[in-house]
Length: 289
Image 1 (cartoon, rainbow, N blue to C red):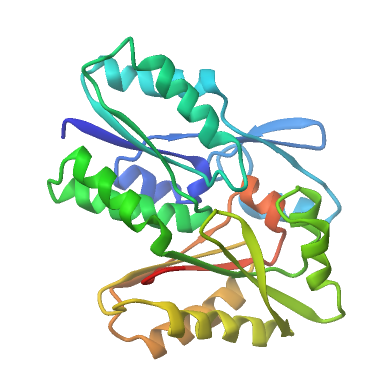
Image 2: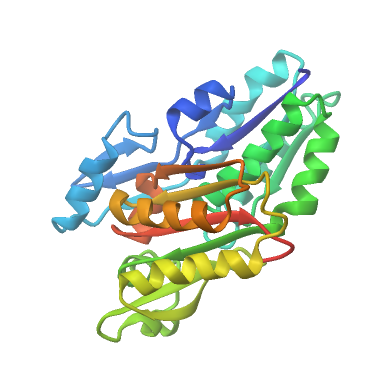
């Protein structure tokens, strides 16, 4: 192809997937116990070890990709004569999209014959990954960079994000949720269900009493929101809670036997630092969010 699709590590796509689909990824970073690590799909730090450390009281901080890093990431492709289609983590929870746009604008005069699209995914984790997944399918089907870009812009607000967290502490601590919104989840035994709105912000939607009800609520949201489930690829990310994730997978497969596939993956450290251990997130294509 005469173009390349790129992303950042906050898609939470597994390394095997990234390699198989020829998806170049630039890595966010996180700092834990005074040491900096790349958010590189478990290479610098095993994801289970990360969550074990957080459960033990570690409070990681995260750092986005800066303008210079985007420039260094993209320039080799431009030098090869390739156009670029890049989607970035939601501007509603990160400044990374803004940094990517600054890098794009700095490169444009140097490569006036090349196209460099930067899409604000308004998505996160495997929701962002699902948007990239569809773009990769279009690329592999022979669609042009303009067609793939237009599809992403037209459909990004159809990517549903429904997730439950054990509590809202980590989202509040990282500034991804307001203190007022975090009060939503303070009642004993309440497991909040949240989604991402059209501005790419995290919004508490439901209060479930216990984990089982929260998992069932995710299924309920999918039942009411999914568009044309037959043949869809469903993504589920989780913060080291495979048993509960498998329960959700089985419920979904039983309810929607015509799905093409259900892929599960661990939430990476950058997203996990804000969501917290025990998070389960469900992503699918609907008519709207």
